[in-house]
Length: 246
Image 1 (spheres, rainbow, N blue to C red):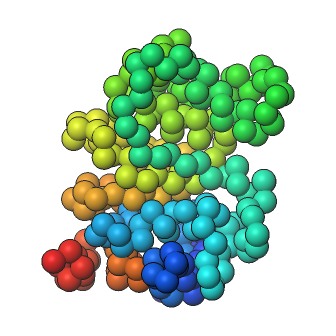
Image 2: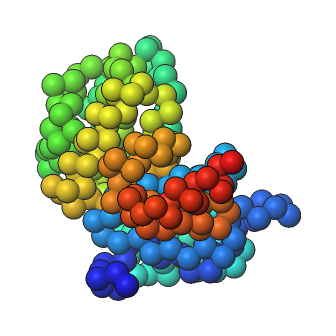
């Protein structure tokens, strides 16, 4: 039994079923994600990985079952004060080199989300955005157009945007898909640092199981159901991987 207390649960899914039309996307999913987890989610194409993230974020409503975030049950929509505790980092493709936004503008959008659209940022807001850029070691690029950065650098900026909004949980969906191995490793090192040094809870969907096993403290394998939930070194993980990927 886990030594983590119930008050440490930041995401709880209980008996969650999600359907697309007549097709089951998630079936009887029960998951507790704890503060400080570095959780990797893997599974075959169409197994429900992204559906799981969307359900957590309130973008999909379960047919049955319950989602609770930071101890609060989600009914029709996630309360604003809870929503800002989560930062979503999407899968990226190359951003147009002519896209006019500067790095600092992109990160400051995280502060606008908290302050409210149409409101001016305070000196404190701008400082928090700069602090977030420093945390991901991108403050030297703050005046660069984001389209001029490498894929790995763009991912760092998107992570900084979430941190600027003071997110306590980072949700990342296949963020490595457009990156080469070196860039991927650098971003995973950054996530590891944020997790261990700043207590940020990390939930990342990925297809590279070797990479997830190297960095994550916990792995979930999903194939519409939760097929495995445990440590990366448990031999049972290899058994499950062979079953659902072959």
